[in-house]
Image (cartoon, rainbow, N blue to C red; front, side, top):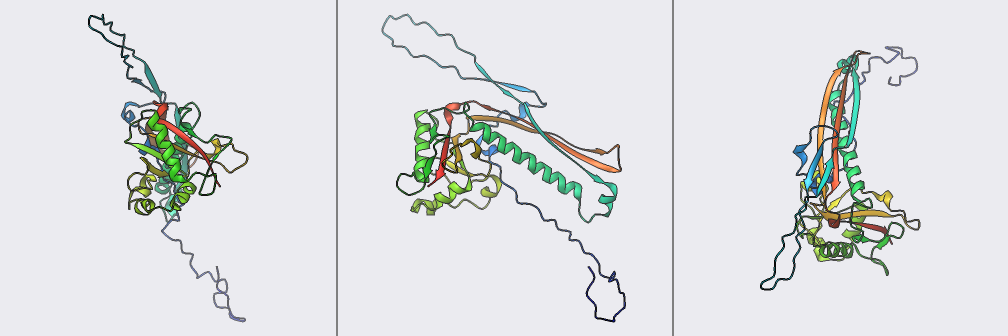
Length: 307
């Protein structure tokens, strides 16, 4: 852009002496946190190599207890060997290219920056898909539900509403009924829920609704410790579209135990090669994963709305 000049001043009239300066720093977009790795069972992570691989997970047999009296003939039961199959049947990819001229003349490393962006986008897609899968009917016990998909439980502090702490308390009781272990329970909700939670008139919230200096950035953890038996996570990937309540703007929160959902995730390949049709490097990445509900009794959902 040329500077304005006074009338009649003709020295360097086109203003081409003014340089265009490009910053070495790149304005990156805001990135959502991922919570799936922190709330699912990843014990089978190292057992997959290729798309379509399966992991056979043997279920614990149920042992029958019968009354016994002296002299009773005890007949051993046959053990069952039921198994659940975790299949690596989902894959996502990204690909881009950087022309040699663009790479040589550019003031930033486009290849490195774009690879980082692609890796984030793949992780975010994975996070969103697994959370939606977890909250889809059939993947949780139908008794572990607060509200319904067509009639949300109103959350707030007015008459007829349920406070956020009460929601967590009900969710805790539902898992207790299913004999779910009290350790490693989690609750995932969007920022709106946690905002209302912060309005709780409670010294408990003042003491615990703080988080620590690292975990919220890493995995969305919002509580330094547990509240009502849950580790709380904040996520913009909650599957709110599963709430079809036409009378409210509905949301979906998910709760459960870490053993309930198994995930096996792997970045299969990130590779660079020469584009055969131009003077450019092509970079592409492939992410493959599987997810499977192992314990539906240890998962539940909350269909909720603001009052």
